[in-house]
Length: 287
Image (tube, rainbow, N blue to C red):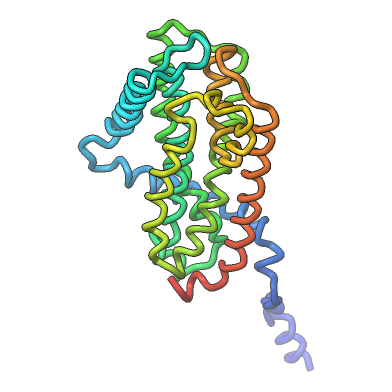
């Protein structure tokens, strides 16, 4: 009897029981985004290092591309088409203030749209919220943006244009540009897993959007009766906001049009997240 009592005393405590609850991952999805924040940082740093590691003109290209684009657009729209600038601001500064948000948007959209395919090996082997992958891809575009922003500061110094209080609102318009690309990027990268030919659509969309957005010209040249309709392109409101922050009083934001652009950004963000979450469960099987 004493032996049995001693045996019971030395027995280990009960092992923890793992409970498999249906839908648990769905209920904890948004909390998991925060729990996997280190993975987000690792993926973002991987994308940035891959872009600039062992490249001859990696950072130089990030400087040359916006400068060359600004030069070409300035010649075409200012010298050839003879379109006016915003107030007294130099035309090249107005163009560069439009290139900044457009490059941030287009690069983010391109990187996010192919992010799932580029991370196929990781997605097929381990669970984590897949939303982290396109979100991390946008970090690379933001790194390019910071380099281009340094060029803008140098241009403003060369023209002796001091920033005004409007610059305090620039982070908000930067966020708006990122969200404008994130929503469509989520939807397209989800479709790209199932239909691989969507990767050929993005370059065309980016190239077409460059000419229909007010990058090389001021949106004020659009006739008044069409201005609200023109702001269905969400980048119109973003670019106007950037110019208002950078050029100050020389640029104006069309209030009703900006509100419409903000609504379009919110709609596509909701649509992108909902479509992405609906298809997320089949990514590992199809990729």
